[in-house]
Image 1 (cartoon, rainbow, N blue to C red):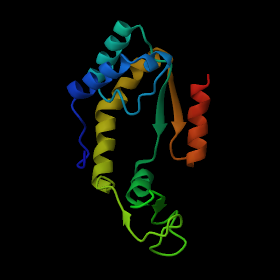
Image 2 (cartoon, rainbow, N blue to C red):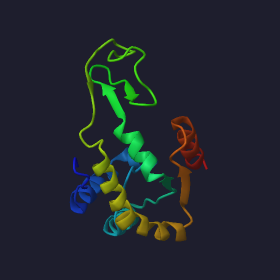
Image 3 (cartoon, rainbow, N blue to C red):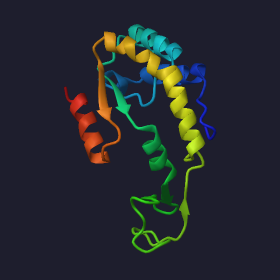
Image 4 (tube, helix red, strand yellow):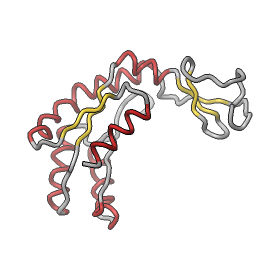
Length: 163
């Protein structure tokens, strides 16, 4: 994962199949970042058919890759309370001190680097984008501007899910 690679299809498909057997999945579920490949999409279709379930929506977040790299590589969190910050967009009010808890210990995720983000975007273009026509033919694809502010993105996703 740190290098931008993904967990194998067999592992992800097995975990998902088991999870879809839980009673709460009958009331609805959200899959974040799955399916990522045509093999996963085929496995998902088969799983859903077998379990008497179906997809209502597929949401694609549209992003600008360079801006996404900037967003991700600039983020960091307080190691104590988890408050999020960014090198340019949201620095602590006092340099090096968390606004929430006063800690001076901050951390960055090891996979929050430009190479990893670009690797993931290349994986998306090569393996995930090609499965969208399958879901478009079902009339369930909605696109959301993933570069908008978080509140707008969340509201846009909520609007899709509320339909």
